[in-house]
Image (cartoon, rainbow, N blue to C red; front, side):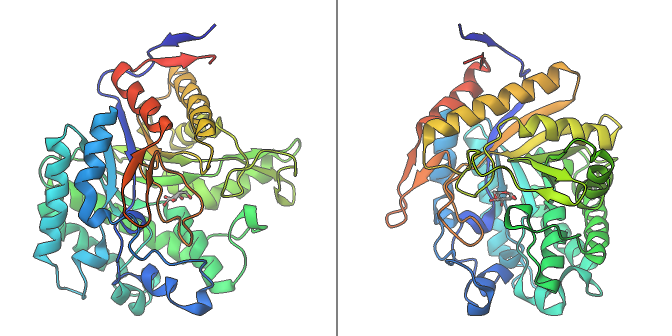
Amino acid sequence: MTQTSTPFPDGFLWGASTAGHQIEGNNVNSDWWRREHDPAANIHEPSLDACDSYHRWAQDMDLLAQLGFTDYRFGIEWARIEPERGFFSRAELAHYRSMVEGARARGLRPMVTLHHFTVPRWFEDLGGWTADGAVEAFIRYVEACAPVIADGVGHVCTINEPNVLAISAAADRTGEPAWPSTGGAITPDEKTTHALVAAHHGAVAAVRRINPAIRVGWTVASQVYQALPGAEEATAAYSRPREDVFIEAARGDDFIGVQSYTRTRIGNNGPVRAPEDVERTLTGWEYYPGAVGYALRHTAEVIGDGTALIVTENGIATADDTRRVDYYAGALEAVAAAMEDGINVEGYLAWSALDNYEWGSYRPTFGLIAVDPVTFARAAKPSAIWLGGLGRSRELPRGA
Ligand code: BGC
């Protein structure tokens, strides 16, 4: 029999996440736009108009609020705010300020991501994160975001998935595959790791200068490295540069964002591909809803100081929405179990609010809300109604 319980306390964040480049469309001044139009980059398809959320953000927020969500994580685009080095666009800052106010007017608490994978073209031309002056340039951008975040923003994420950025930097440099799902086991680029940690610490200080009441942190990709028997030491060594150093760099922050989708099993020779017969999602990852529970436990253990955790991304790319509901039900059970074991979790934000541009392709649909690519019409999927509804009832079906 299905039982219900209410593991999520008052004030618990209940939301969905997006990223600027993946939904706004026409982010033409960014490094990603350039890459999407470079034949040598071998990108399946460009983002183009994406979900046109640059113009339709109000519709997105209306829907999320109506569905029952209380929190919305969205990104603001550095490439729009600082289109040329040192020129900060008042118009773009006003645009993002309207989004903050629009969220609050609808009863959605905004969580703002300052950097989600994309940089302005001029920043890339200077040499990216490891160039002289890169960290200072990022901090100046964060300071310039004061008009957007100074009032009414409860949470700010500085840099999204710095570990993914450092792994991608190594892959770009060497041409090796980056991810275990494509046979990769590359070590993150160390200089990029150091630059990102410095940029994060500088950004945290800048956000606190803007308004010390803002809760600030960064969001780390948890790959849920699980040791095969006898490979415990190899797994710990594998996790360290790819994940743990980024978690440790969050000590002293107001929260750390935990983002997980699947697991990666590690043997003594590195990642071991899941057996052919496991269920896979549209990204090719193993269907593994319990991942987020492991991710929370690992993050809490590594950070070790009781810093609050927020699940800032968790979800599944599938064309079968019933499978999405199953995935979220399993994931939420794992979150509730971690909380019952005393892990300090302050919120859960699903990835993603919308079917969006999945860094090279529109095919992996992570969205709770479908978007018509021609008319941009939005349609909430049954999973959105189900997950949003839990935001109202806060009741989790157990053993469903
Ligand atoms: C990123 C998102 C991405 C999602 C699914 C995370 O790595 O932050 O931008 O769409 O995972 O791949």
